[in-house]
Length: 331
Ligand SMILES: [Zn+2]
Ligand SMILES: [Zn+2]
Image (cartoon, rainbow, N blue to C red; front, top):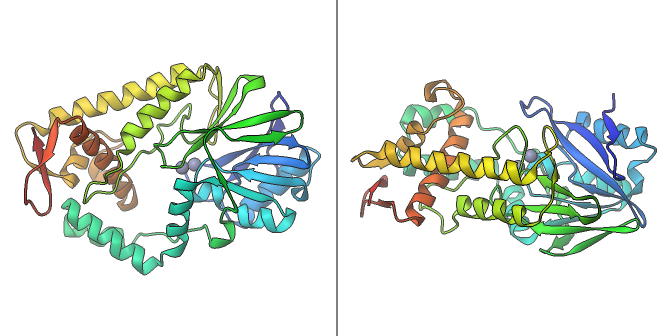
């Protein structure tokens, strides 16, 4: 069953299923180009997703062999997974920002043993209880993207991609990942937002726990939301969920959401010295901390680390010298 539609402005939207995920699907966008079609993102890598993409293209009068190129918003498997199969079937080029290319290579080049060792070290450094570490070790999934999906073209900010009679403009919007790119269709007042701005969900923004990264993911994300507002674009088409009718307004909501979380976290410190794990426990999540799955807790931990990292950057919180696992307190 294909789920694809012409949504106006010469844009086709194809819903590519993500098997077993609460996110449900990745929305792939297709537009005609000088030699066929350009896709924005490709989708998850399994047979179900492949059927969704190929039958979706057929239902709009195209074939997978028409694909000239795939521009990727970022390196996550629900976006890059199918790239290898698309390239094999069509000879398409695959383009990604340099900063995400580095992460893609490290993702596909790391064995599951290495991932497990690094993840465990990260949780120990965060001050996670042993029971949580054990639970997490029993639940780590394998990665559905492989080297076959590696990009063969690097995207840079401001680059134009030729479409049929018009152009798509790459806009670097780091935060959700360091090399996240949104794509502007200036003639139609539309921005393809990937996972940077979504209508219903709040995109994940994470940092590694310890040592706290130099990179301040939340600062990047907030800056990128403000950058999107300066584009003066009304409509957003994200990779998941509903389209965005008021892009600047939605960006405001996301900025406010994180400012509230930062305020709440600062209050939650009180006069105590707490680990990154305790920071995560004290933040508000979509369900009580104890009810979150082991994998959900590690996602929450990286999101907590990003908020902590940003409070450190604002000079409101600092690490207590020589603490191990690291503990943090208000300045
Ligand atoms: Zn993502
Ligand atoms: Zn995604």
